[in-house]
Image 1 (cartoon, rainbow, N blue to C red):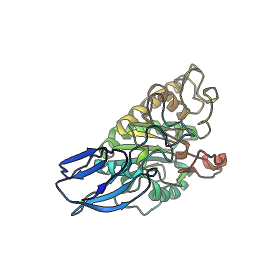
Image 2 (image 1 turned 90 degrees about the vertical axis):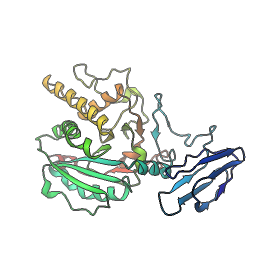
Image 3 (image 1 turned 120 degrees about the vertical axis):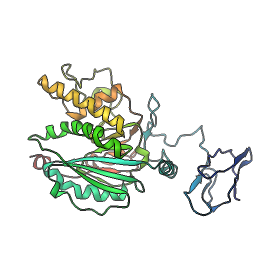
Image 4 (image 1 turned 180 degrees about the vertical axis):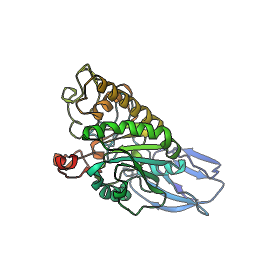
Length: 347
């Protein structure tokens, strides 16, 4: 048996393998169990902590022993890491992907990704899917739900085990604004009819993007949104919320926490269903009243998040445009806008 001795006490929950008990005192942590634990240690000083990866003899999932957090220090001092309603804001350096991956593997979770490749937007699928296979929730089961009016033009991309492309044929619309707003209706309908039976989480993203770094299970929560790269440091008065009282997306000037991007949101299937259903209802009510919210479905998304707080928020690392530069607080650029001629693509 191995013993990991540290200056501070650790409490480790041993999963699955019938470990009988944990002996815990101020000298460190001694692990005792009904099976022999073996492994190789990667030592570090007190600041870096002590990390071991072990496996149960005869196979099985690995588990980790890791250093205790220090309560008088912060992982990041340059950014906000928690909202007033205790929702974490995810930045590089604020999470341990090893621990998270193991937790989600034990739960055997599956993730659905919705993208809309309508009309000429189908040209972005190749890069999107190839980079997603390299960086998106690697090691977990994923269904790529591709909404398109051109199913014959969906590219063939090599996929890892447990990952699938599901093509969903949908109509196109004359205006790109209508395509954007109708996606709330389509996601809502398919969530109720199909997605709820096939995946645990839904991630709804724009297709004219590429993955540039790891986007893992750290994003997953009951309901999450992403800080818009153009407003993450702005004052509330600068947010481009819908302000006209006749619109269902209206947000009063003294309300609102953040400005969220319409190009990356998600959560459990049931929570995404509730979000998209409510946004679609608001869009249709606006249409009946002859008004269209200033930023279409994004305006309705922001209205929803004012009164239904997300349980996790992703930093602009998860939705960035290199035309905006590379500020020091941005340690990773995980999901990037693809350069394009908007007018040519939307026509």
